[in-house]
Length: 299
Ligand code: CO
Image (cartoon, rainbow, N blue to C red):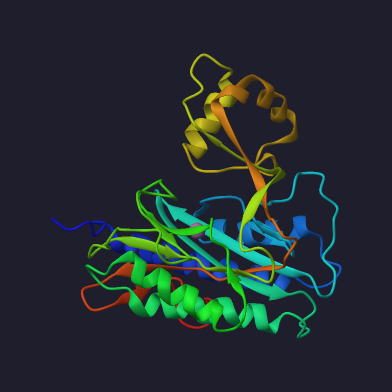
């Protein structure tokens, strides 16, 4: 018995769709673009391939490390020099992929050092992945690549294993050493997700980032709310995906929902992130979210 999903082709296709949508977001993130329009372009790219977003497009910028998605009335625009994390997930029947890259809006070179550090860190982590490997080896490789550039990993954000309809499954993949005693098994799906910063190296909770998730089934509430549960199950969602006339039902399901705060760098540092979803093979990782869908056809 290995943990290989029996529908591995579906996972590969969800990953291809995620990588393509990530590239759509990167291209849309230009000075003057509304953050809301970038999020909607990403989510439309996912739906146009017959998949659903596994979570609202996360577009966290500068000191925001993660978990910000625009609200329905968000009119904020991107500025040249913003350091924007484009974190994207798609799923097909609960087969999920999760991938991110960091762009400097306007294509300048103010943030090359941070961007190249996390990019090197994700590759260093991926290079350690194989059946049976100690997770700490991956963490040490990630941390080493970031420290080598004089930066800090964000210690309290981690990569994670992924299972059907479960974005954050059993094992965490820390971005710093000495925090995990787990090993990876052949056939597991894993998101490797380093964050680097020039700040304190830790995040703290900020205000609500417009992302929620059902923590329990909203039995006994309104039919509208029950239809949301049918649609999203326990995956994260956002008010932008709900028709305006249905949003009143949020007040009736509050107790069934978990609300996510934006994660902010505790020292006010800038944060960059890079992320790939990989399959743990006997000799190494198969990176499922490589490429941008520009060439070749869908698996
Ligand atoms: Co992730």
